[in-house]
Length: 256
Image 1 (cartoon, rainbow, N blue to C red):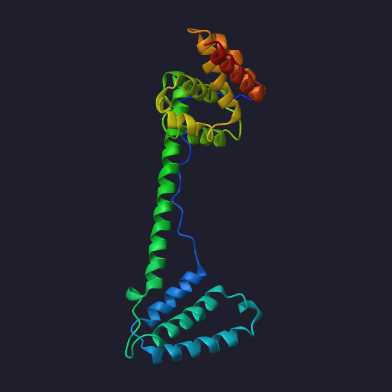
Image 2 (cartoon, rainbow, N blue to C red):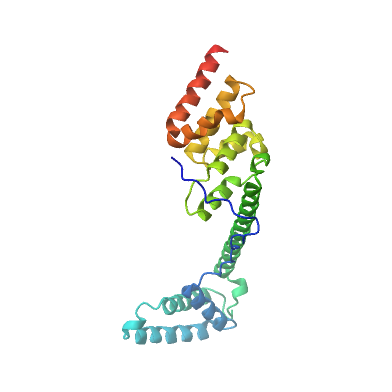
């Protein structure tokens, strides 16, 4: 038996909090490498070798202090000085270090830019989902959800509504999606979207949609209110509902 969604409230209630933009994660090792590169810019091989010896001395001193044994930034700085020492040792005489021509640095910057773009895209998607969830909540309270066609990404919006409801099953939202999937409404007109739904919706919703579709073929023009038992069966026995849908589909194919 499904647990009903929290009771409807007035439309003037506060909407769910917006998604906060996450800060760039702190990486002590990356900070250490950047510090070294700023210091090393313009240094020749001799200057970098001297800086490496200083870093090794500092590392030996730090190893004597228990609270500095796990100094991630310090180890990263030493490793970067060692890398730059090898880089300049292999370069032509008189070469000075320039991070703008360092392939390793440029690859890291490209990776960081890609990661930042991914984070921004994730935030935009979360904001879109939150806004659409607000919209569906308002439509539900107005009693017009059934007149609305689902859009691409509404499966994730369903998950957001579930999260907001504290894990409660929203029977009306699930029924709305199941009916749209069965009737190929909204973005479910696209076969690819219907195929993708198999991995995005829960087994009860999928079983509900499959059984609705077969019953609609078996009894064309059947009123939605007459098929309320389908939702109850799909919710309590999704596997049985799916088996029944498959049986009806196989029977229809054999008799056609």
